[in-house]
Length: 310
Image (cartoon, rainbow, N blue to C red; front, side, top):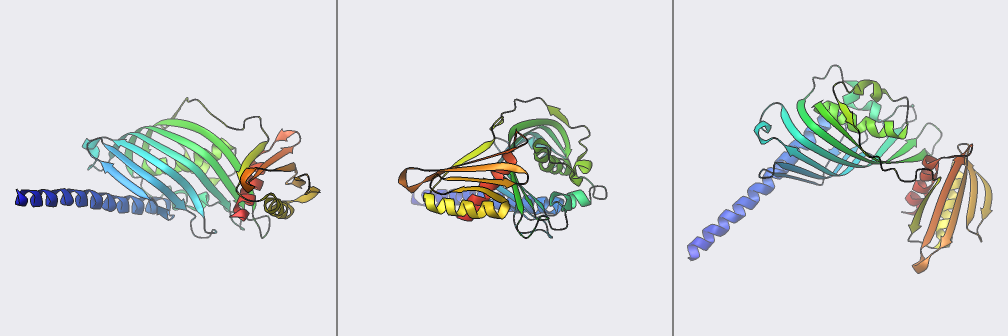
């Protein structure tokens, strides 16, 4: 009985080790392949392949800026789920029944030379000369969060705009790994209305059909963003004033009332700070230009304040 338990323990430990090492090896291969296709560093926190349910789960997927750009994240996807056809797993052309990608944030950067980080990726620069990696994706569901757009052409400090896209789109019939990567990179920019990117011309989604889905967009019709910050009113006001002074010209500075107004990128921006409980501060940032809401500018101001407070 004792020997049986020992052998049983060895078998269980061996199976656990095989599972762990299997996932580590595949994780390394997938990371290397993604970096090779895009031409940018790629990292993922976790990777698991469940053969019984034919499911792959990836957590904490991040792609970083290519060379020639400030250090920073280009894409952050907390969750990726893939359901694959087991018969094609070891074939040259993989068949994926469903791919679900949660894109929480995209860091779009324009360097001092006016070049976008997405346009400098290998997948864009060598799109015609590089042979595609064939695959078949029956259905892709892409959830898009926000874009943080940093423009370094305006001065020593970048201009920052935040686009809260908050929508979900679905596609069918994606034919290659390159097409999938280009789609994931270009779609958030299209949804936010960002123009002039070289990646649009390269994407050319021939044979990829967009499916009608319900669009859930937050902040539609609103001109403000809001956040509760775990810091004192006085400290948040001081940092907010510094950020707004750097970004534009102050038109009102009322520390006692918690109000800051300024002109930033041609928009009238207003910050309202309120003392909360437990030494917390509520901040509301609104922006309008020619009477139209400018959530990208309001979001950019709030983003820089939060970044400065870290």
